[in-house]
Amino acid sequence: MLRNISKLMATALAILAFALTSSAAKAQSFTGNYPVLETQVKAGVGGTIKGANQNFCLVLTDDGGFGRLHSGTATLEGFDGGSLTGGEFYVIGNNIFVNFVVGSSTGEASGLVIFAPANASKGAIGTGILGLTGGVPSSGLATFGVKNGC
Image (cartoon, rainbow, N blue to C red; front, side):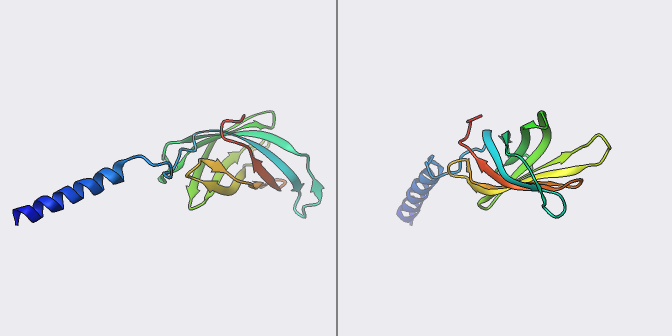
């Protein structure tokens, strides 16, 4: 009986040691900055206003602060000549969702959202959609560059 318990303990320790070792396949952090090129911009309720291409820098701090393993604060640099702060992001499954509240000089609030595929094992973000809601809505294709490429 004692010999069986010893074998069981040895096996359990080996499994535990394997589970705790680091692996290249484990999730990476999304902390860093990502260049974003917004193209194919259309605005207005009917999407009849063609917008210009825009470059931004999305800065993420991945600290799990919003209840998901990969979540945290976000800043969008280069928005309207400055930085849009106070954003938050969540990685859910294989997607990243980033949202900001955007104020205006008239007191109207709108939202800016980014939705794109995300690869947690590489900390990479794929091509997705950037949309501005409220006021004059707009949307465009958001192409992300390499992490820490801003």
